Image: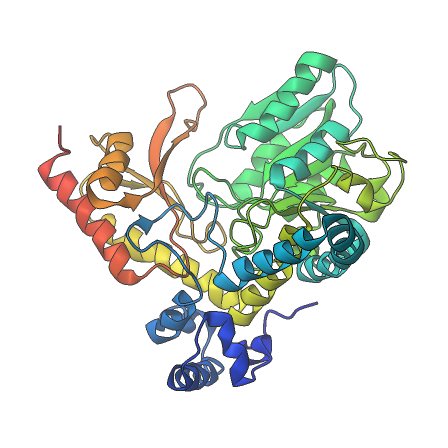
Length: 441
């Protein structure tokens, strides 16, 4: 397993020449980064999160558009330059003779990527299927697990529409009942969420769908407690890790889960169109593949990958994304994301009518933050921020805690490790201006 304590230098395998991972070529710049990274060994990840000289170098790894301020990195994250370069390299090689180079030479290399993902997640490579996104991953499970008419699936009103749509389709076709519930946000205690799931299960509940961290408010769920509760009752738990993997530090053993799907093109910063599905070995046989395989009831995890011809370049470039993630330091990255969230939120909370819809508690949240302001049209504010100030974020409709009222509209803000504090200051400054002076007509 890749240790979270592995320091930055070892993660790079430092050789000053390897500092090209950050697009740094000048000898003086490389010497400067080498000095800073040695200093990083001496301080905690939380302290490193506030070291702007270190993160200045990390920002150079991204070839992004600085003519806008992108605060929607939670949607799809830009990949570092080395990842994009790897995609191009593999794509060029494949294109030279696709049937030979792609199928014979590149496709077998996917097995090493499988091992690297498994190493990161803390499981066997024989439990990892490489997919195109978390939607594909979870619909394999949600549509592949056996259910009969009258069986019940339990989830929350905050879970992602694509996943719930899979369940609603089963309801229409097979008579499966989909039961949802809402919850207070942020909850006073993360364990309150586990209690709500336990309260809502019945003797007919066969599957629980749960977000590891929600896309609406960035609420982290007590996955391990829910999985253990469900296992005692013979209930399968399918976990949506779209926003979790690469965002904060955890492994499979921390979750005690059997089925977990994740995107790689969000916080792991891999090429767009990459994800994975983890299924505990003894559970693989009982899940039908989404695309029919030669032996659909085998226990080979690769049965979930029979989706026809697709670019192998995207999968192989995952290796560069994983290397970049651990070179920075997984815990440093987590603490930096949390620090950035707190940086803008603590400034804005001084505004009258400000409501933080995301918990500040480290066990309940990380880099995602959602807020609204009484009396402000948040959708219009988001539009004005982009049209007038080129600050890009999104608004989300969060179901009311009691499930009976209209959705609460909040602005979701997701900066990333390349985001500067000055950019966040500009965001805060413009929000303050529009709150005090009104939105333009």
